[in-house]
Length: 132
Image (cartoon, rainbow, N blue to C red; front, side, top):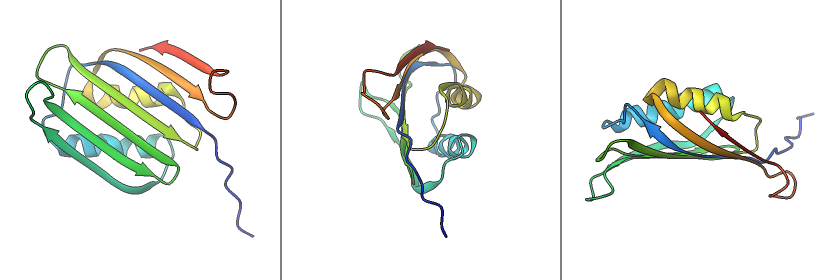
């Protein structure tokens, strides 16, 4: 008999600055695939990344669809410090530290703040805030 998957609803939002913003979208795709492996998730579709060259919004953006939800990153590279915003929602188990370490390995985090929401309960009941 096949084991039934019981969803775990975790949501991590990160805002910070990196030292090595990617210009090559393949670097963003590589990061997303590495992240999925490191946090024990499965790819459903993607990754898909693009470089945006709209004045004032320059930078790489990428998403990946997981069998347990999604992850997305946006990195603005026109002005220092290089701002990034990251979001992962998953029904699998993961920690903010695992995700932040992966971002740091790929783009070298200068500074970051996060909110980690356990959405298994009331959305405002289980919120963890932190820095990296």
